[in-house]
Image (cartoon, rainbow, N blue to C red):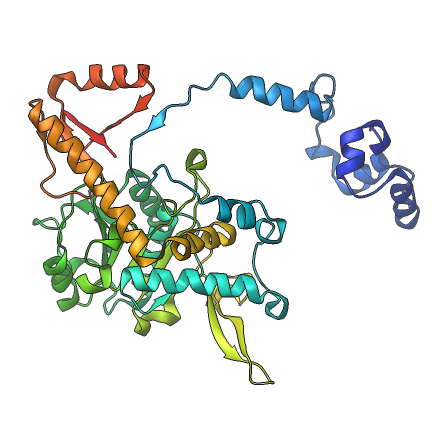
Length: 421
């Protein structure tokens, strides 16, 4: 086995020095690391032949190899939508938060007495989400929109009036959301019904809750008030997955009657990052706050009468007994939640509305131009994503777009649709 001194990278990045290793081995009573491994790991489960890894590379050589591999990628302009959008991160946020180790090393502010700034920033995130969704309570972020939907499903099951084995999912939800919800439901024995929530597919008496996408993955904006009223008359819970930028212009989930709202805050200044990570949000009516997963920042008064921030609710199994935990998969995205909240602070309500109007105006201009050229736009109402009936030319259009550096989505909603976000 190589010693740390033989590998410059390991010597600089792994804590124990050769002298430290010798001291620890002496205390343990082993003559070498190999002997320690022999004493610790049964030979029956160990691989005897050494791994054929080739010669070790230096840190500089590894970086050169990674750059060479990355250069083989063809980077396109992504216009697939599905919850991921190009953003502009204000330089002041990039320099002072994203590139600042006081922020980017944050995980969870367990020690509230020395984490007041971070807790205040997360409280700002919660307040922003509560304002956008018109719901009273929001937590300090979740992992991403798809897992937030799975969390909302489990939350709906905890607070639903009746024990029913099925959960309804809008077929216009993002595909990754549907997949994660189905995966979460399977071991719990819950049935997932995917269909049209405004048609006959939704049976309010047969489900404990339903998830709606707003706007839909196809770009369509629909009014779910009647569907939500039907759910409530049968004791079921309504969840809306909503785009926060669209909420700067649209009626909020709380105004539509939703019990829970979830979504991604990626488009609030966070780069796409090849699919993640991005901070998700979850908000709910105050009556359901005890069923809310994750962490909630609250405001208290310290012994000297000053305002103090603290983690008022921590419902993950790391913090409380496993059987009492409301979630086992939720993970806060502290840094990205702070960035998204500061994006909201930087632009303010009027600035966010201006950005939303500009985004919608450009989508409307594109739709009008396509109509002039003879194309059929299938969206009756949209915010920033349009669905074009490409007919039998879809494959050719998608191929030529990729050749010119544009990545469109082939919608599965109806044959011949191509989505542009």
